[in-house]
Amino acid sequence: MAVTVDLLVWGKWKQNWPLGSVKSLSSSIPRAAAEIEDLIATTQADWLLFWDPLLGEPDVELVAALVQERADAWHSGLCFGLAGEPEEHDYIHPIWPLALDADASIDSVSWRLTLSALLVKTDVLRTLGGLDAAFEGTTGAGLELGRRMIDRGAVVMHTPRLVNGRGSLSDRLSEHDRFVFLRRVFGRKWVRYAALRRSMAHFRPLKVRSALRSSAAATSATKRPGSADQVVTRDSVTSPENPTITVVLPTLGRYELLRPVLEQLRKQTLPAQQVVVVDQNDVDKRDHAIYEEFADLNLEVIFQVERGQWLARNAAVEQATGEWIAFVDDDSEVGPDFLEQHLEGLHRYDADLSTGASLAVIGAPIPENYAFFRVADQWDSGNGMCHRSLFERFGLFDQQFDRQRRGDAEFGLRVQLGGCLVIHNPHAIRVHLKAQEGGLRTFGSLDGFRHRDRTSPLPLPSMVYYTKRYHSKRQVREDLMIGLSQAIVPYELKRRASPRQWMGFVAGEAVHVPSTVKRVRASLRIADEMVEDGPRIPKL
Image 1: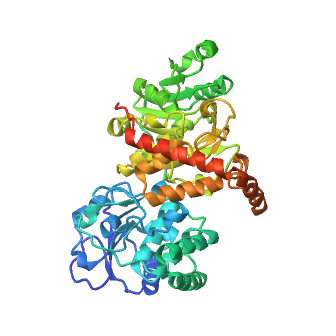
Image 2: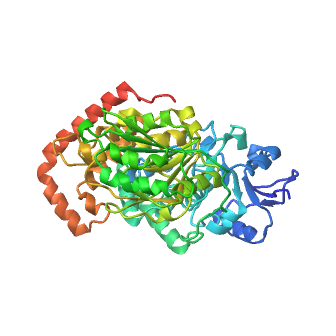
Image 3: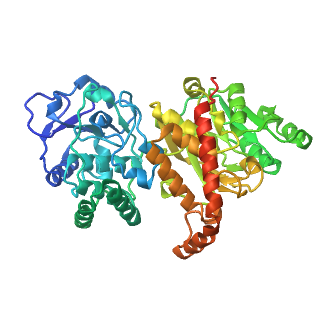
């Protein structure tokens, strides 16, 4: 049966539309929101195409092709100048991977959609709701809809093909709509913080104050469409028969944890054809007996004298013989269907890279969005899988990150900005034991902004190297400010500390301000040298 697509036009339309019905939408967002709500309750169409008639006629053949591809929503928002909007996102979540935009000339994951050219599954709007009537203009309403969709499990992608690369500038985001968006997406304290920063940056405190009031009234009077517990889902699929999988497993100082991981890999419902362990322990401390014990795993061991987690993983990928490559760490516990779930999720979403749910035993609380499939906002090298061809296309891991952090984040972002789909799989679960010894703990860091040595550069230089490679100066600055302020709290209370505890930690940190400034300057200097040296990404 042919897929049907209803055409929703912002204005009048006289041309024939062969894929479905045609409906004209009101230019008023509240009225258009009501019209769309009525439509999705009654239409039999599989998809809806929102369209600005000033763009001419949509390409019928292209629309018919796009509905067969992997996204739940296609749009051309980046062709309409929406990259980076709203700018206040930088003050709140400056280096969130999904806040970065790929080049507008390629297909890529992006929630910054335009309602002038949007092709979306009808069921997605039935599940998550249509337009938010609290907005005044289409720009703000489109941004909020895109963010709501990607936050709740929909695959939302930009494509220049929908408008043949033409596009135009969208209507300016009004001050009112800017703060409606912020209120819908972020918490109250972050909205107030963004208002303060915007007032300081643009010298318009009265406009900001007025927008705060009007947006508060609008969001109080109008419920955000959909329900927070509703998410977009897809049916499971059958994975290809007899896939070949290589597991990459680096280890350092954790033999007591390595044995249980190998035992769990032995019991997989979808066995790996090869397990490559990269052992970076001191020569006199190597335990060869453990590898003899698990010889039935098709175990291959690479002993390395030089230490570095990306050096290790790159060596393992180079030696891998499987068409699929899975990654797990030595301080992990995985279930018997770990590999099977990763592979199924990749095929269910036609994704390029998979990351699973890593449940930490200490540190920050487990986010609610770990519970459902969605576009991933980070990639975890301790719980992931991809096809070997991904490394052939993008290169291996950047060895500038060796003995430091954000190397897996960089690879995930590199792949995302290259137009690929990275998916979070809630069924591919590992328990991250966060071992206090071995691994990266060997080099002294608890995380990027917390180090056991109070004289070492702060944050780890690789943290700044990562942001300087991909982010604006403002994003680098804001990430540094937020990271340093949050690092005042001990790792065990990360995102858990009460206001009273915060006050105590701030008071205690005051005496360290001079040394902290010195450490930050050292980190920035080293990061600049790393940027100047450039990435060290071997080819496969």
